[in-house]
Length: 417
Image 1 (cartoon, rainbow, N blue to C red):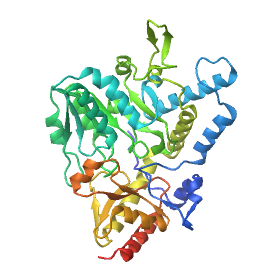
Image 2: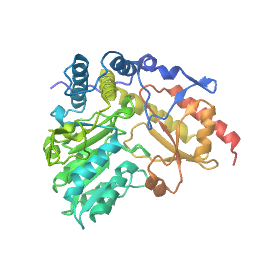
Image 3: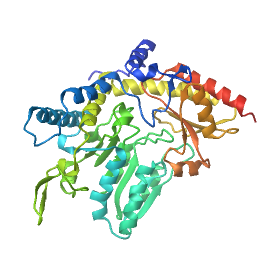
Image 4: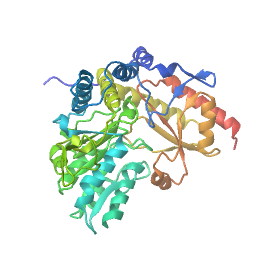
């Protein structure tokens, strides 16, 4: 067998070519070139994605399914064709295993209410980790309040690495579901989800993966992982807001009741009885975000053309460069230093609040995220109210990191010890 060659780090001109695909990167902020380092919150959109959504509205716009006129047929073909492309991107066995949702949050809530809630009783347990986003905490708290189940939390160490021994130990006959992030939005930690899924399945426990922070940076093969559910948002992977996908094994979807009622999720309705549609449409009540689905597929096509591994290699090199540079900044403390990370650098400074740092950086043209990042338990774990988070995408450069560090020098001038 021919050995697999390592993925090379893209050269400067390649990254410059990627940057030209994103119109917003030509914007200026406060008279300065935009340095966009808030990709963990939302990524920018390439021209091909913008064009796909514009073309849909200019040439195809109509409601999907049931319509016999040409535009409706075009819209349906585009909508269902996008579902197939999404399935292929994450290696799902069937397009019917992809449910359109507004994003990761809605996907997790759907699983919580349709799959988990009917299956748990007082004394049962749901297992999550200490590094989760609120979207992978609150839905489970709601289910526990509704059913009398108990939420169990696997700890992390000081580096932000999951305690795998505790994960294995805390899985037990009462565990009805394990839900964990593929990559932490606050720390950047990449969890060894293949191993975590294997441990859970050995005990008969299904697993949901929150893939919001991983989908743009790591290859995702749901078949190889054998995960039961995988959720992600379009806007984290260069697609539009308001659209995302839930992958679920077909047999699980078949056994789940609809979460919402209305149009398009039915086969027939009388005042006495409603017959529900087949999967995945039984979970897609009402007129969907058709243009969003089309544009999401275009975004995944864009990432596929570049290569997730290629982009990830570039981002890993950039994170290493940024981490080295930030460690040289006086009075700066990094938050989260796991061995395996996506391109997220979180930090605090001894003499300035995160929000003040973010405000000064904005005046320098640098966009970062400040606050608790919808991960307040993580902030509590590290004893800080908020952090500054610089998060990288395929279009970021070392010059962006240099601008961040220069902006932090300005922070030190304005907030001396």
